[in-house]
Length: 150
Image (cartoon, rainbow, N blue to C red; front, side):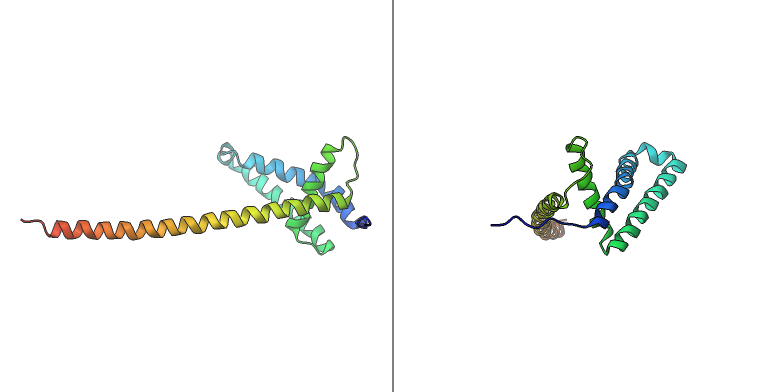
């Protein structure tokens, strides 16, 4: 059995290098925006929203050049950064290693989505049963109240 051929895509490797700081900044901004105290400081909040939108647009432009979905490119860059941070100084992340990591993450996300969908369907069924029970009980109360001698 032969090893799979290496993945060679200099444009993607270049995009990972260029977009890594932008993706890091987006994550920083999102962490800051998640803090409710920042909403109180509206000018700073609005500036950060614009900065995040500009960074996302830069990623989208690069993704369009690669004929790739912008979210997919952002995820590739994010995963490459995780790998790079664990490599202790090595800057190059083999795309074949990145493929394995992204494919594994995609499978976990697919499983999680299926599980959550099943939970949602079960919750909807419980809600429907509860609604019918509530309506029936309300009608029972109404009937009993109307039957009161008085």
